[in-house]
Length: 355
Image (tube, rainbow, N blue to C red):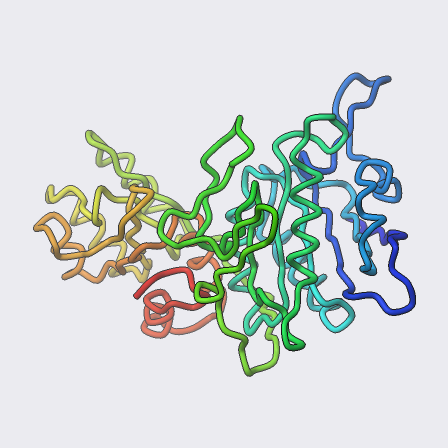
């Protein structure tokens, strides 16, 4: 994998308003149609002004780091997240904000992971992308990129307005670890059902300051470890013992995100509870997440979740599955003992849950 640096010539004079680093990882946003090959290919970011001429009006210094070869977001891995966090760490002091161009399919997973890896973040890290390639006439790529750059550059009283990892898409700025992709064929691809937007864009960008995380007092800490010894167990009516067993008894398993019904309910059949109890006794952490887009897990509200509470399953409150799996990977990667790990899973680390 190679990182290619490209400086963009905007209208920035000797005294620019802000310096922004764009990191292109891959995805539809950076694709153009190759007439010769008759399919989409990544375009050369040195030619970005040909596709987004509006950038010439910005009073910003803009630099692009182009990841080559581009990563299809369906192939994104823990190592890619650690690489991205390392790039931000290396360039943190040089830029006022960061824009990450990323494929939409796993953008919510990546934004969640980055929120955990970048502790005490004081500058915006804005993920964005597109449903239609930047080389097409009817594309959402231009507006998403332009606005993401503006948000990344916006400061008030000498501080970034949004010191968070966010997703900007189709007029909404969402907390990254509260987001979920909900559309594959419309421009409004992302929602945050359990947390309000951080900003909405129309004629102006209207920030909801009360929803944005406060500026941390401590210096940035970039973590460099995550565990991939995790799994997702999605429950459904009629699920068999063999299916549950194959997941909970997977070799080297350390953590499971269990997608339950409603407010955290699960089957109370003896074989199911025995398999859960056995996994917990082997030191596997189980994080209970609701399959509902809205609402929260309240273990013990019904008899079918009281068993989970009593045996030590961790309630995930109103966390998304995307944020839950990234949180599990992050917390397990810290190498803490069992009780410390459990305590971290219960805590609100980066605004991912409402306690």
